[in-house]
Length: 222
Ligand SMILES: [Zn+2]
Image 1: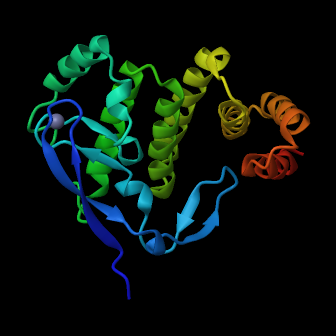
Image 2: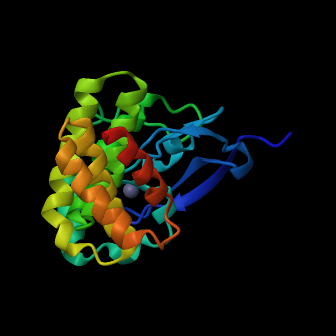
């Protein structure tokens, strides 16, 4: 049997420190089912929990998938802003720092919050939305609807604020879909229906799984 995790190393793009982290092997990722917003429910290991890594030296926190490219996204101006932000994190804040398979959920939540701050400095609002979505999913799993809805509401605000800067179908579909879904969750059915119509009308030819999900969501709104 293959192990669920393997170890890799990465060089921190901010301080240059090299550190190790656990990576989930692709064979260990099994989606059992998905919620109506496509939130995956995994059988066994939840790979989302290991999708973020934190430099143990300077606390820079980022998506593991960005490890290769994030250095090119950090311009001079971002660099000092990120350093200023990282300086505000104390050792106590970073209690539980763990990049291995032993990571606990509290530290994963902390990583999401820190990474959203960093991607916001990097002017990647939709990445911030995707990160916050992961946080809302943790709250959903914990049946903490109050916190989940609060986060969803924040995502809606970010998406609306930056809607004009979506520059490809993938982003626009993401925005329209979550706009619909979040409005649905907030009980604003008309608002939700409007965006679903737009999504289905304009993007039904794309192979995006969100289109199929949108049609299902439309069924829920009736
Ligand atoms: Zn570092």
